[in-house]
Image 1 (tube, rainbow, N blue to C red):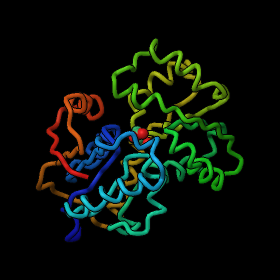
Image 2: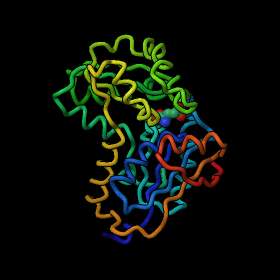
Image 3: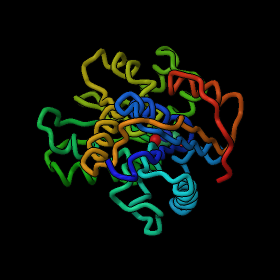
Image 4: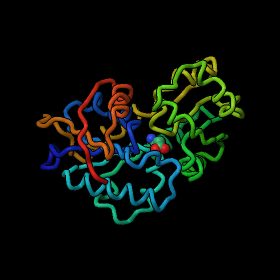
Length: 265
Ligand code: DGL
């Protein structure tokens, strides 16, 4: 424990998908206080240019600094593709975890799966960040990556039934037949894990990424001795645009209804 320990942890996404990550963080670290930001005024991030994305992400980092956070979890793959290229962030590198590196470290060093599929937004897939980092760690991996931009908006609108998804999956998963593992590289996708596994008749595994991010954060906070042993404040939730639909979705992603405050970003 240090003086930083009781400070909150910032978690952000373009919208509400990052709440899937937050849910895993809260389960693993119930004594930590979290501040969640969903940049709903600017979503989707997956189709934005790098320059625009950097501006949005920079504003969120400033807000989380202003909220006195000790650590930031970038719970958005699209945002994760730009933060390594931003040198003016108000947090040090070892105070930030994003959702790509822990997955690359785990999958790049294992021997069980050789044929890997990756799905994500256009931004995440076209950045090549996953492929390049994975192949650098293990050149023997055989990677099939595809942008699946319809999935995040479908999830947000509740189109998650298997018969609705079937024709979309038929198209998106062409070429994934020999995959043994799929990495869902978008924080919205945990909502579809069982639908994807069912689509492949359980012939492959879908990597449960929120759990891996939670374990990485817990390990890092302990290593830096900045974990909290006794929570002394409630979690806070902020959206840059609040509509009834976003409030309804929060239950889907987090498993509980929460009150959101507005933040101008
Ligand atoms: N949650 C975002 C991600 O992980 C996807 C949604 C978006 O495009 O904003 O990439």
